[in-house]
Amino acid sequence: MNTITVVTLGASAGGLTLDAMEAMKEAPRVILRTARTPVAAYLEERGIRFTSLDAFYENAEDFDSLNDALAGAVLEAAEQMPLVYAVLDAQWDESVRMLTEKAPDAARVLPGVGMFDRLRQAHPDARMCAGDALPDALGDEPLLIVEIDSALLAGEIKLAMIDWFGADCPCVWYAPTENGEYVGKPIALQDLDRQRRYDHTAALYIAPQPLRQKERYTVLDLVRIMGILRAPGGCPWDRAQTHESLRPYLIEEAYEVTQAIREEDWLHTADELGDVLLQVVFQANIGDQYGTLTLSDITTAICRKMIHRHPHIFSDVRADTADAVSENWEAIKRQERGQKELADVLSDIPASLPPLMRAQKALRKAGTAAPQDTDAARERILDALQGLMNGAGDDRDAHRLAGELLFACVDLARQRGVGCETALADAVDTFIKRACEKAEADKNI
Image (cartoon, rainbow, N blue to C red; front, side):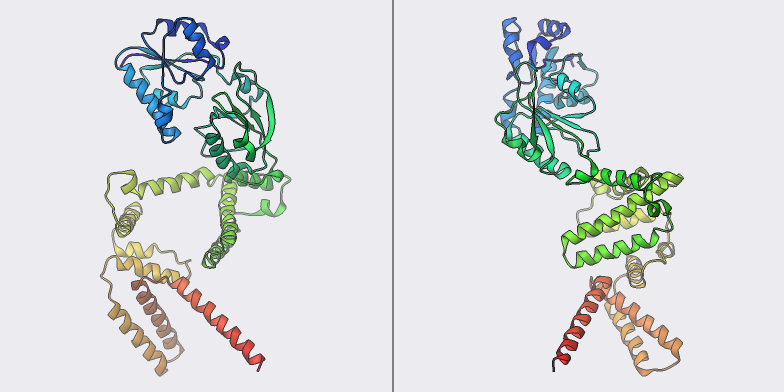
């Protein structure tokens, strides 16, 4: 493949470097990402012939496919001859990033005066990104979003950023400019797609907000809050906690989440899941302090586990049904833990689980090694029930028979696809409701 020289055009002809001009004069072919810039007319006046990739904008389904298509077109052209690929700001152009990834040996990027250099100087601490390549996660740093070239893109940015910053978040809007001179105008984030004009020179600055003034919060905000609470001079109770002291709270919060889900109260569910997430961040902060674990250890462990246990997604293993996925999952788990025999699998079930949940899990794991037998479960239920009803033996026998009856009921429920914990919880709710209704009715007689 021939050499691809990437140059920066900037906001105006005054920003062109001598190296960029010489490269375009000498190149057999010059390709502009877009000719919709004042610099294009300047190049024509200087006798520099070029083609543009403006036609790709009309056919692309989204910005990722657009940038991929632009990079592909440049690579295809470079098969024929050396060329110059001219963009508005090479440092932040997504098609340039893709180009250098696909052809690292062929592409060279010349230094240049970027279209947004003046904005970078005005906001040196800001994290800068193109409007069509927003970051997946944000921290506490200010954000400078550039190349907001349409109301449609502005609307997409608004929807994405509102979830992080809130609709009323104060921002600075930098309207399109033809000479690189920017004048900021304060706007609310929700008004981003209501501005008079957009083009590739438009930009938005979002300053970080104090914690107490935010409308929306992220996981990073929670990490920051926990750091404040456990820092010297922070909350005495939070500073006194240990891995061990927080154990009961994690169990309690998990049960409260399940209750909120059962009630289909999604605001309550979000609140309770937040409490569970707090426990994770809390444990990570303690671990970081004492060198036992960090939040990165936690996220790394679960990400590695999810990738390893989904080979049908991240590798070439086939699993076309949910049952096949479950079988793969259990097989991989046994392999990870060195479990060769059924006894190894059953012994690994935590004794700290609630008995009903532990019984169903033990039966489920044992059931993978043997066929289901509802008749046998029914016979065990009848035998244990008969023994209890006859009242034979002492209290120890009654204890044993009651355990066998419950265990056999769990087995039958499992074979019928019933979750015993939720089924029993619903039955208890029904009992309490009916008992309360009866008590109320008796009171009114």
